[in-house]
Length: 116
Image (tube, rainbow, N blue to C red; front, top):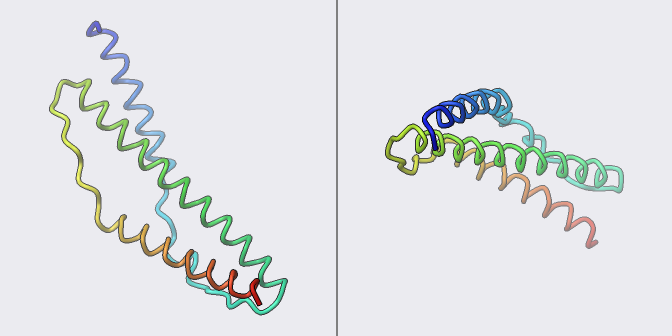
């Protein structure tokens, strides 16, 4: 590739990274703190809706983060630097695990109620 083309691609990547950065919003840690014990159909409907929303948010967040990481590594590669796998932020991994565990707990509660 010509240097002009590489320079153009690097500029586009930088713009894309800025856009991604503005879209990656840290999840609110308290979004699932209000565990709802399912006791009737209305509560089951609310819990199901919340689970769908939270799972969608989780997938959205993880997808954007993965795209950001790949784009950053591509940018480094095109810049002629050595590409090394970036270490994951352990706090974001912990946050992901915490969110996923709370979703599982709420889902188990909903499943238990539905089996009764």
